[in-house]
Amino acid sequence: MAKEERFEKIYSQGALTTTEIWVDKETGVNYLYHACGYSGGLTPLLDRDGKPVISQAINR
Image (cartoon, rainbow, N blue to C red; front, side):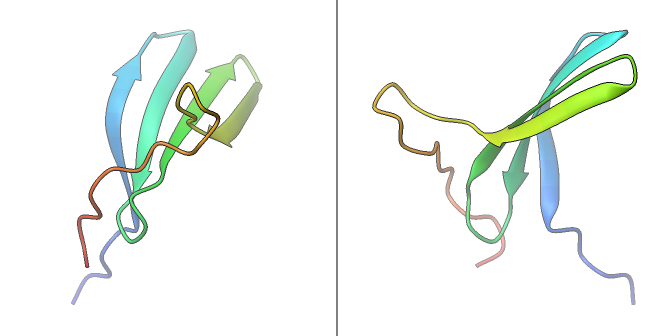
């Protein structure tokens, strides 16, 4: 039986420079991932009030 993946990519744009949004299926927290060349970073996606963007959790 295959193990269920915890994160799901819901958005992607770019080729050489990549921007993606990933959702934690257990908590619903959205993360912004940006990569350019050999570097990249991941951070929680925040709303205008500085709170994490939370989608409805998929695997609860």
